[in-house]
Image 1 (cartoon, rainbow, N blue to C red):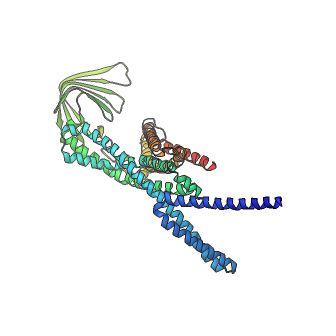
Image 2 (image 1 turned 60 degrees about the vertical axis):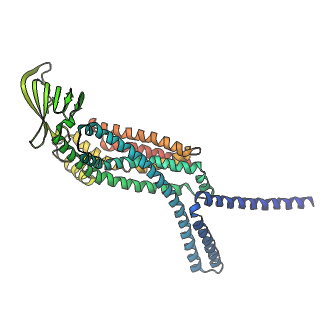
Image 3 (image 1 turned 180 degrees about the vertical axis):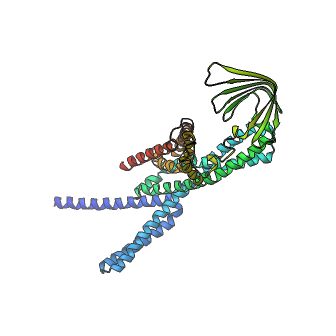
Length: 452
């Protein structure tokens, strides 16, 4: 009797445990729909009712042994399952897009203000017409947009996913049987869309803006040469350097000019008083009329020897290519990726072009892809990183980590560009290494996350 009673008690407990587990499961489903996707709750409920109906239809077809009926209801069930996942993926994509837009506006304002300050330092103080200044700012916008998009992707995605983790929406995701891959799908899709948008800005609008910017700047310097000369400053040009004293209108005092020719010989010109003149010759931006000047010429092959000459009046012409690089042609920054690729192919067979110049073109070609498509690598890193640190105040930590990583990425890109141009290192690896490091780190973190 006691054994029968105990067995009955165990059966009742098992039944109650199953009922309790069923209630817990239903409650999790309810919380999942209500909290995380309240806007889509009605659609998801309709999908669940229809899915139940199709499953019953499949069971009925199986019972009557009708394969067409079974196939019909099986296809409908699969489509409903995909539709439900699409609703969840769209919800995540909308949240990512919202945070991206906010962060993009933040970075855009930062870079935009920085550009205005640079223009104010060099152009606005010289009383350049307001219309010309507005045109210069407009021509700078593609570069600002292309630079802001990858950083906004990293910070925005970290903040968005960090908030989802902090609000336990990711936990509800997992409790309802969803996989991390569904979130990752939305993250990678948004990263790809942003990368394509950034690439269009970087490949078409950026060269167009650069061409118009250099053209407008050349016109401003020609009309007002004093723009390029600032009091008590050092002006470094492509192959020469100016040490400038006081500038008062078109008058310049205590001017020192260093120049290195193609033969390696160094020339130094010192002038007490100079006057800036507009040039009428094509390719010449300005002319400096120097008074009481001294010229010193030193030959590289004869160390310790030099020649000097003095003159009461001396004219020095400043050419466009000494201030604006490649003014006689089209610079790599002013080309699209298609034109740049054809240029690199033609340069390979030309032995007169130095390897350093060829590497500069290769670096610029790699940069046209590495910078905009950095959004994908940022997205790969943002997903696992936000799940790791986002359990407590993930939105704030996402902002902090995102800004730190953005600064490090920006510094790595600038350093890689300097090593590629000045040091002659391979341009492809200098531009793509930061992206590959971020992507590899993101993949490692994601794989470790899946094992837990």
